[in-house]
Amino acid sequence: MQLTSILAIYFLFWVMSAFMLLPFGVRTADEEGIKKVPGQAESAPTNFRPGPLVIKATIIASVLTTLFVLNFEYGWLSAEDLDIFPEPPAQIGPRD
Image (cartoon, rainbow, N blue to C red; front, side, top):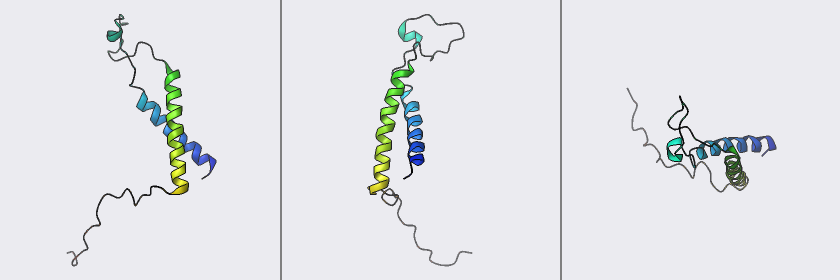
């Protein structure tokens, strides 16, 4: 697998991980007991810290990319292994 392909897969896993982690650990103004600014959304976070989010997303994306590349190299899991639908029945006669 080429390095550019690995970097593209890493980027996709990183973005997916970051978006999946966004809702965790968020506290609203009501939960913190802080007065809301006029026009502020009810669900707006009071103290968004992207640093821990970036670190967590980087770790998760690194692990997922490593597993993906190793699976690509060694073929642990293929598309045929994930096929959960049975074969369609054979056609008995011509359709009109």
